[in-house]
Amino acid sequence: MILLNSVKAVAESLAGLFRVINSNHEFNPDVIDQLCQLSTGTVSGITKLVETVKIVRDDQLKGPIALQSTIAILQNKSEVSHSQEYSGNEQLSISDALGTLPR
Image (cartoon, rainbow, N blue to C red; front, top):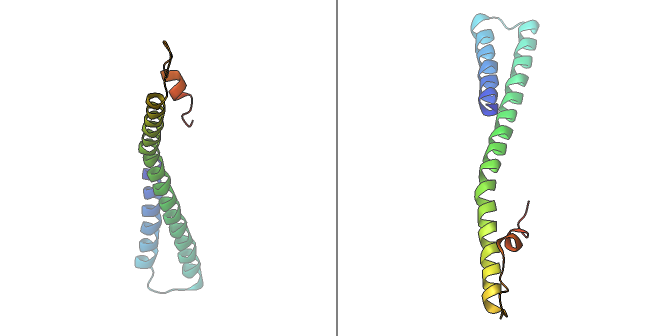
C-alpha cells in the first residue's frame, strides 16, 4: 500500500506539470512559480518512491538472509555435537540451538 501511494503521488505531480504546461502557452512569473512548485513535488515524490522501493526490497531480503543464518547456525551446532563425545543421554536440544539465533 505504501508503494502504491508513492506511485500515485508521483503520477499526480506529473499530471499537474503536464496540465500547467499544456494550458499555458505563455510562461509568466506566476506560471513559472507554479511549475517550480510542481517540479519540486515531483522530485520529492520520486525520491520517496525510490526510498520506498528500497525499504520493500530490503524487507524482502531479510527473510531469506535470516533463514540462511538459521540454517548455518544449526549446521554449526550439528557439526559441533557430532565432533564432541557425549556421555549418556546428553544431546543438543532444539531450544539450545535456537537460543543462539539472531532476533
